[in-house]
Length: 341
Image (tube, rainbow, N blue to C red):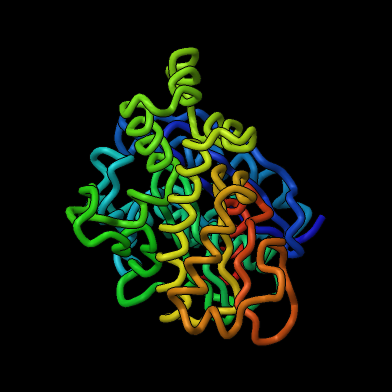
């Protein structure tokens, strides 16, 4: 079996641990239910136990390079502490990396292989997509995840760009509407308030409240948990209020991307998350906005950007869809450990 590293994706309710070979082959993946609200000590014990079990399966057959861990929140790269995370109560200021390394060093199996790379989950996902996914072979790319909010990571020359202190890539908090909806970050009009899954739901509720969206109202009445997918299905059937929601979503996403293209001038921008499944509905408005707001994009747009595929023509700015799904962070974390990021 090949040399390998361990990738960890710590969610709010599930801990996923994977062994990944240096060639990118997934050797093993396990899911462990966890309760981060019980505090870091318990979660770290569960995490390290899972890391030991997975590593033990493969350690005798190949060299082990260490563990990469993606967490929800802002990570201080110098101290290895989680600076801010609304998903992990009691974790702010906790020396997460040092605690994990200390716990692994006591392992008879992993003692001298206790190197840990800790980073934001969006950065890990970006590295995963650049290594094995949509941006494979592309040295400079940004990966933007459209979920409840908007996460992002930037890879330059094959390495995560941290910025001054690990806080680079906050695409979700770029202002797209100066006097817009209040955001949890303290600002107003942030991109994630207009171009995320939660934004789609907010717009749907507003449409229903007007009394002029019977299709959306019927969907909400039959399913109180109606989500972006249901709204997308309505849009695909030609429901005009649903179509307009995705056009608005695409427009604001295009505003955010146009700014990113103007500032960064990267080869590729990869969109991830479940909402990307509605590409056919929102992408036309997104690209129209990008062309009108970014001279750089207008000058470098591919001939057929709506294909959403990797296009290899030099000098083209490609916006495409992610390929690795929810496993991007696992692959990226394993890659970060192998690289010693």
